[in-house]
Amino acid sequence: MLRFALFPRSASMRAGILLLGAFLSVFHTLKAQKAEIEQILHEVNLDSLLFSVKQLTGIEPVLIHGQPQIIYSRYKTQTPNAWAAMYLHDRMQAYGYETSYENFEATGQNIIALKKGTLYPEKIFLMCAHYDAIALPYDHATGADDNGSGCAAVLEAGRLLKDLSLPFSIMFVFFDEEEQGFIGSNHFVQNFNFKQTEIRATFNLDMIAYDDNHDFKASINTRDYGNSVELANKIIGLNDTFQIGLNLNILNPGSTSSDHESFWEYNKTAVFLAEDDKDFNRYWHTKYDSITYFNDSFFYRNTQFAIASMLWFASNKYNDLAVQSINKVPVFQAFPNPAKAQFTVYTESNGILEIYQLDGKQIHTQEIINGNNPIQIDVGNKPRNILLRFMNESGSIQSKWLLLIP
Image (tube, one colour):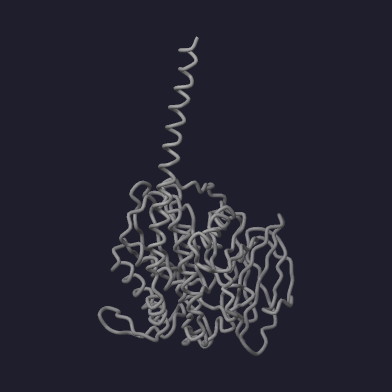
């Protein structure tokens, strides 16, 4: 009897030892991963970040085909915006990434840089920012915060991660024509082969350097698309884990006013990292959007948090972030942007359109139907930004920003 009693005990003990060994293996892996990320975050360089913004806003020259050029504006149809694309392409290529242009429409160019993973090259974590800008007059669309700040952070991530060996692939994308309604990111998502390659999560950086009241508040914008809510809940703790020092807030439902919206429209996992919407950049979409108004420490910490968020998943072969399949939600678009008294709203469902001023005052409402809908409102005598809020028949709400000009 005794020898039969010992056998299951011995088997149980062996199983327990194996389980403990597996746990310790994962524990030591996570400990090493944390130390590696801490080292990377320590190497984030504020001077590097600011110099990139200075180059993107015309304070410092860039080399284009061996000749110094000044990026004095990044409005979509102006030559310096094409120089910005070349500059971003050449920077990422110099770091050793597989870098390419993705062309669309007449002048649009997305810049894509890829580093393949060692274990799961077909699974990607993506960091993005739009590089185009808008302001009146158009030849002063330097866009330091919107979105030179996001581009500089992505460049810094590219610089720091270039020599790392990671199990998952990482992709850096600089989108063009975001200001006209996410045209570049829409093109990217619509033409991406999701059956062959899986984008596990997207981290979109847009306006991360303005903190006028110095409270270090920043937001993680999320909505119930893919596993975006799960992603937001998992990354917010990294702020404390790595002692970054931000005052973070999860917004759900979060803003749809940047390129992550293109991923959400296909039910893909994405979060939008941005400054506090209650301390909004007063120089947004004007020629005064300058590096002069940056909170440098806030900019630095947002960059650290973005890098920590992506690297926490891309460097962990035990990554447990679930990914849901593609399930496209109805498209909502407004064009042209900028617009005059009349513009068009396109939807794939019926619903109600509401239009608001920046101060929150509602200035227009109407029913719209599937397809193109002409909208006519009073422009006034000076440029202004308006928010279009569309609620479809199922109760889903989407929003877009539009610039009105006399």
